[in-house]
Length: 488
Ligand code: NDP
Image (cartoon, rainbow, N blue to C red):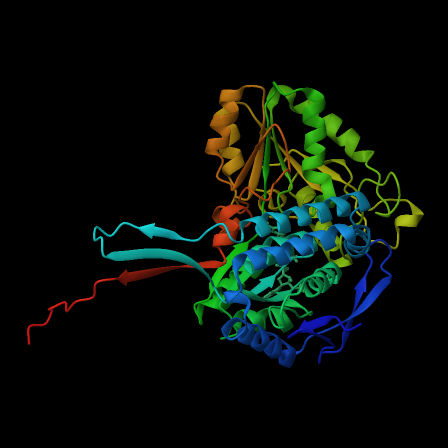
């Protein structure tokens, strides 16, 4: 079956095909069609026509919500198949992929419920004969560009609110993991999305992503990915003054005070950084730990990291899968090498696994680096892999200063039994999400996004819908009369 969806029809692309690899063994899972410049133009034209002339934006919002609710049902119906595809494509464990499908379902339900709740507001004019209304309207044609780590989840955060608001979309998933994005578009088709409302084009960033961000008929780009790509997209969008929302990387601090229960601290430090092999934008990659606890905690974290079971995401008992690609593993290896040159000590990992059955895949052992400081490249840059750096602090003020000493500001956590201190630190951290005595949870109702160079705008929550809306002011003078501004 062709893998591009343009104007309500599945089609092949003019740029041939590309192999999608299984990161567990580098085998080919599927061959998918690749969009050429003409396919990109056709997809944008279809979305433009569907927005300008189609029924979608004038469809009652409750009906748009009902379509999203049907997608949620289909996701649960097909949960096992979609989760298996996600594990094949990304390498993550099947348990994680099943959670992803449930989370995506929750996102569709959240925006289905929200679609018809905001009728706008009446604004006080001081004149009884004038009605002033501010109403939400869709932005128009939205290009949705997603990364490879949570392909289905990241797409749901964009496509569900975009459609709820009445926009039309062109989706461009990562070329590395496109499969579940195609599955989701099939469900949107089955749920009854009119032709042109949802389109998907596959291909790489330069060939497909860049022309979409430059296209004059696109009104908005919503992008999740790396900092450098986000900067390029903001530049590319300037010429046509598109609305741009960018969710970029993170270098997230996990601050642990000495009063934290030891087992709770060890367990959460491991989960924060090594889940999905650290390929998580909010990964707790920087452990910032209080002096009194540091040696004991770090030794136990390293011991437990060495015991993490790597393997095929489909196998029972496997805790972490491979990295997504050979190129990405090479990048991780270069970070560990540079950290060692700069004086970091490897307490765990720092190498590929030895097991013969893992040699074909893109595996790398969970790695703990002690003796780190903010001057090191591995501490400053997002590695997006299974690398934990350790920094130590004495006072609360030092902890806050270390945590904020980064150009990023996506997420962070503080572990302490002192409630007042927890909230002081949470208030002081310059990041979009702060967890207190927990790591990783997010919910569809609460906003997600970054401060500083982790991006602008928010996904999820009420703001996640507003990103895809224009606020239009309608002034209605019910008693028109000459204004007599000009005398003659
Ligand atoms: P990239 O920035 O490399 O790519 C993201 C997407 O942009 C891909 O679909 C890519 O296509 C596309 N792209 C690349 N170049 C361009 C271009 N010039 N114009 C338009 N699109 C382009 O990120 P990764 O896929 O490597 O994902 C990892 C990054 O994503 C990390 O930095 C991570 O922190 C971030 N991320 C942020 C999240 C958040 O919520 N803030 C959540 C998840 C990830 P292709 O890959 O096919 O070439």
